[in-house]
Length: 127
Length: 227
Image 1 (cartoon, chains in turn cyan, green):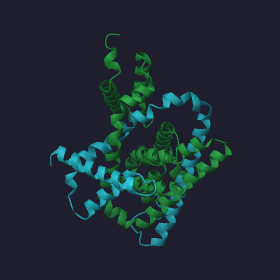
Image 2 (tube, one colour):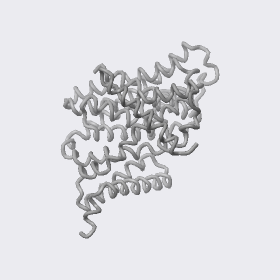
Image 3 (cartoon, chains in turn orange, red):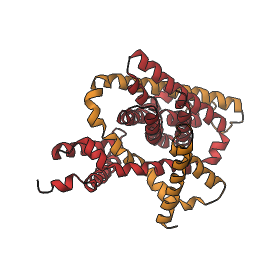
Image 4 (tube, chains in turn orange, yellow):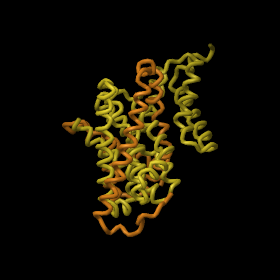
């Protein structure tokens, strides 16, 4: 599939999701709406994976490039947030550990409830 | 300067971004350290060149803004990741939903509580709330909550690097033996940068971490709508 057609397909999905997002009575990101549309199109086999795979793989592989204009704004506000940097770092570290622990615990309980999880685990140390 | 006119064009800003990010990718590939993240390196290079050329960061952001337009198609492409791992998602639907939901809830509310304890203002709190999810979704949540987007981007990248550096240690401390749970915990707490570490730990960890990024992102958007 020509890359341009793949790009056109993906952009049309994005445009549609922008339209839906603007019509909704509450703020809901167009990106999530677009994800659901693309997933539905793929699952319903309306078009195959190869209709968008080259463009999507390129975009996903270089995702962080697209944050450059937003991230460079940190230079402008650095002076304002300087007094809070240590606090922000501390909050990031603590919440990261909490989220990691909570996720491990709940996923472990859920796996136990499922019961059918026989392939892995069983007290074996992976690391 | 004789090329002053060129320096202030979108073409210069976009070229500088592409060159700086490519340099970041090359350096990252050479040293393979999560601290040498391509985006962080690109930002340092751009910051240096901006200070040498006298272009203000605000002007650069405006000139390079066309790049941000591709953020939406890039985020929508995450659906392809879910689609490719649909069999695994179906098999582990309960642990994925339960793990990601509780991780998102605990992340959001621990940020709110800690910001209160450290008496950070509302704008900073709003900027930190989405810090555990992948950057494009985090930026949208930050925008909806009227936070400061660059702070969100910085916090998200920092959290990702934490995940890449310390998740093996946390796995040992919390005795997380199951590769499925290891992947979920890494993906839901430290998104894509953490996932690079999960991929190194094993195929199942990498796949589950990828799934966790998408599901946590969606769930955090839903949670943030009620804040």
